[in-house]
Length: 284
Image 1: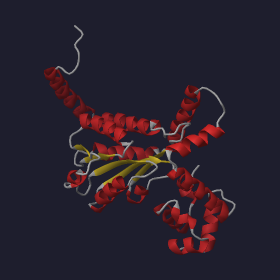
Image 2 (image 1 turned 90 degrees about the vertical axis):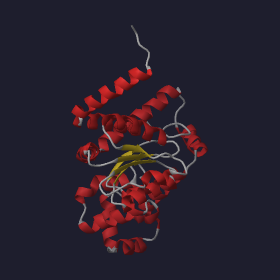
Image 3 (image 1 turned 135 degrees about the vertical axis):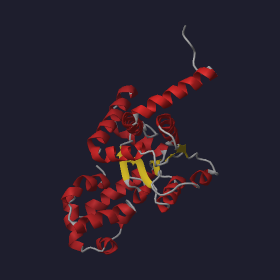
């Protein structure tokens, strides 16, 4: 587990000072924890013993072990495709890639579901089902494909759903963001500045930011109301988006269920349009 995952899992056991410290660490994660213990305590406005007590709750024997874990995570976060392939090639047993890859991808999905807060997920879906809120969906170079998948389905379910395209003109698409709107941002390692700026702008307008990210947690987390983290490491030079896709499909199913009456009406309208355009082949 990452340090961030350990902290989220132990939140209920933390004192107010420890929660304050944990939030300070997450605010510039993982760099915030790579300073000295006294600097970290001062940054979080807590005592040095508070740092030690919280690290014990997280399962670390001391500050050195905590920092070693953060350095390893930082290395994982910034690794490029060549580095990632060299890692799995040297450490995993020789077997067929179908078995090797799928086993890890399925384990990633199960780990995400095990860590998922069902109440937080339900609350997020209620935001999407609220017709008073406009929905914006954004992704990056790779995650943009999943963002488009989620956008397309949400658009079939309800009105006022917008995809922010990864073009130089994207600020145009945020001109009308207002308080109470929802931005769903996809961002995984190596985190993209454009997506971060989108989230910052929406947060400044008092929109609700929801983050779909990886286990190391995108910097967008400091602006997000809901954070859903998925494991993405697989025996490949590229990360797996399977867990984020599963989460997106669960979101679609939940919101569809909440708005089923309107979904039926919109689907009828859409099918009529498909018939007019002869988009699909008829088997008669």
